[in-house]
Image (cartoon, rainbow, N blue to C red; front, side, top):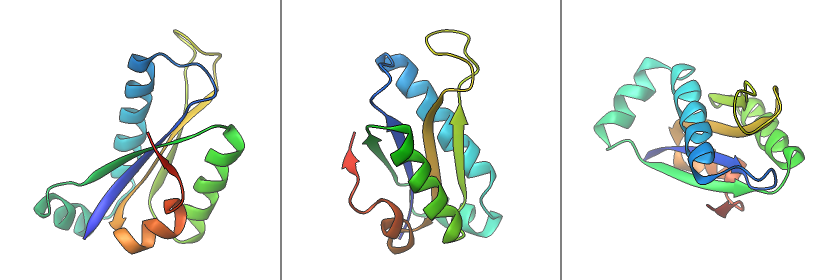
Length: 113
């Protein structure tokens, strides 16, 4: 099975709408970095997604670095600063799609959103 994971920071006081849009940026960014073969297989399985949360920029960056080390497509979102946050604020991370067991090595202990 394949999945995509979206991780959102909860420590920066984003509104629900802002959190959702940042998660969408993370999802699309990571999707665009994924091979066409994986995308095709993931679509065929129903495009499973899981939303998780962390409480710091440090945690989010650690997950990002681990995903890169394991050669999993990923995308770290930096906000443009047009609404609630300062420009460049790191808000969310998209990981995958990729194999469940591979992504679980990165996010297996992270709390559900």
